[in-house]
Amino acid sequence: MKTTKTFKIGEYALAGIIQVKITGKVIQIFVKDYYTNELLKTGTTSTEDDGVERKLSDFLNDVTTSFYADKVMKWIKEKTGLKFMWS
Image (cartoon, rainbow, N blue to C red; front, side):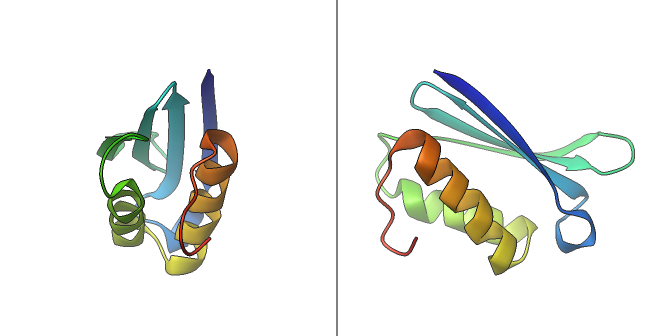
């Protein structure tokens, strides 16, 4: 399974764009500049990692507001079937 979604958040996210790519059990998050599409920050984890929810949450809350971090986390949950405590 390979799924990708781009969240064009704008001023509420570092650089404006958060892209999530799920390939099998690997979840990659890319933070890109809204205007140039330049990659500024990345994060990678696996659905099998201990503390995957905390890793994703910490990364997302570092690059966007809690509102948008929650939206991205809910999408990841839908696509991976992970059971997060708070979403």
